[in-house]
Image 1 (cartoon, rainbow, N blue to C red):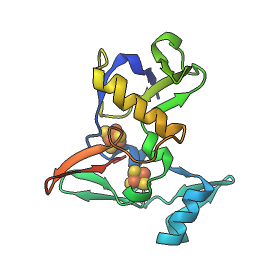
Image 2: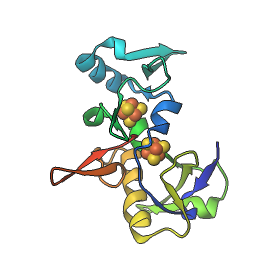
Image 3: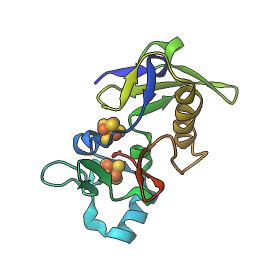
Length: 171
Ligand code: SF4
Ligand code: SF4
């Protein structure tokens, strides 16, 4: 997999392709695991090598992924794990994947390094738009550091019944 520094990305919008919910196992924090188990039962989760995960269906997709028309939607939207909220971006304190200048993002007097996983089909490459640079990346950073929980720019938006309903990953 290839990680692309954010300054090479013009914009990102989740197109509900569902790829990420089929390709990866979702690691849960203990608190996330507890909330999910309380609401949906322990059988929706699994453990391996001392880590907690969402269970996957026999076809490999997340147990909470469902399809509506041609969209792949998240059935866990209201308690979506942080790992899902952050996909496809990685927010790091060191330039682990190279290109330190292009990955650098100044935030509250510090420099963070932001990359995107190139396997996401919602990435558009080019010069970052103002919205992507100043709102979308910022929101991913704030979710990563725990400064916010609700998603706006970091989730897919589909128009239903006059409201934009955030559904991501459907990621
Ligand atoms: S975030 Fe996941 S569902 Fe959305 S476009 Fe990227 S790969 Fe597809
Ligand atoms: S976004 Fe939802 S459906 Fe996709 S992996 Fe995460 S919890 Fe599962």
